[in-house]
Length: 126
Image 1 (cartoon, rainbow, N blue to C red):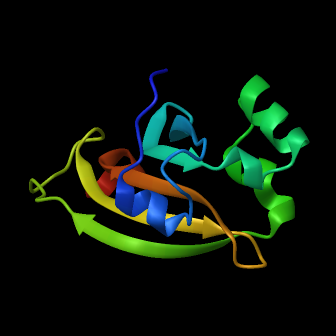
Image 2 (tube, rainbow, N blue to C red):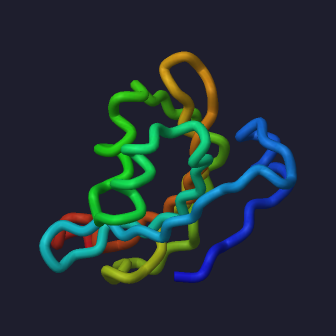
């Protein structure tokens, strides 16, 4: 998977300089065969434990489960809706959310850009 660089604004929200290493993951949240959301996930490996980094590098364990010991909090940065057709299909984009995750002590360590899809809606809504 190709890396997607952080913008200067994202680096500022994570309180890191231009040369601080950041890792990138592209993830999909699914329930069965329905994709509910897709997300870009940038995290600062120096702010995670070596064990967390090894798990993220070597497994498909969900990011939230790996970083749970950090007692993360989430701050929403932006919410952007998409124009909707009358009956959105499972792959139609509904809205995007940008958020920063910080440790329980307040240190930012991750930024996510999530896109929620029509697959997240109940069948009767699509």
